[in-house]
Image (cartoon, rainbow, N blue to C red; front, side, top):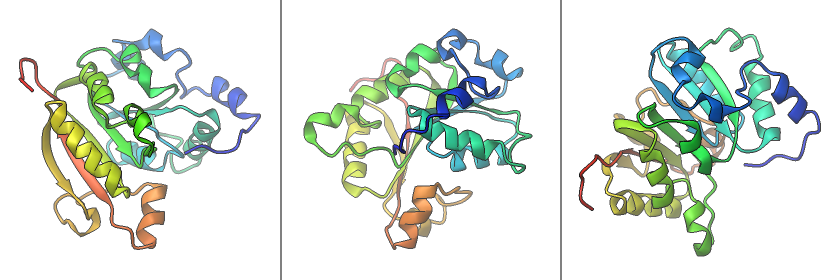
Length: 222
């Protein structure tokens, strides 16, 4: 998701205390950033922040980092964070960066879980490597996830979802669970927090796909 350019975005982001300005300097030190040893979970492509902010509010014993590439989008998440509903949260930080640099910002075994919600499908075949569920990105996630760490992915794009299921297998990961209709799957929908896109697509009658994949363990053969 990319919004129109907002001139004040850069200044607001650079001045906000919840935004990590040089995230690469925190590699291996994220527990110090939060001041505790709680698990760290990240959302890549956070958008306007609804999902991550609500996750942080409901799970005070977990630290959350929202990763968003576009400053004009991150601005919306920061503005939401600054509302009365969320501005007391201490377990959330924001980073403006390209997801391809994820293993330059987080160290091995530093991340407990990664959330991918309604990621850009990059529909052209030549752009497949840019998809956040491609083998190339799964390899990056292996470099930061703890053993048996997971990736949770939601989308309404069934073609992208099928591609993702295949990539999980190709990468040697374990598919823990999946569904083509999340909101009618009682077990997987338990505790589900909807994103802005999820609510929009659901109202149109589009089924939501979700998978949970467990990272490949060292020594696992493809």
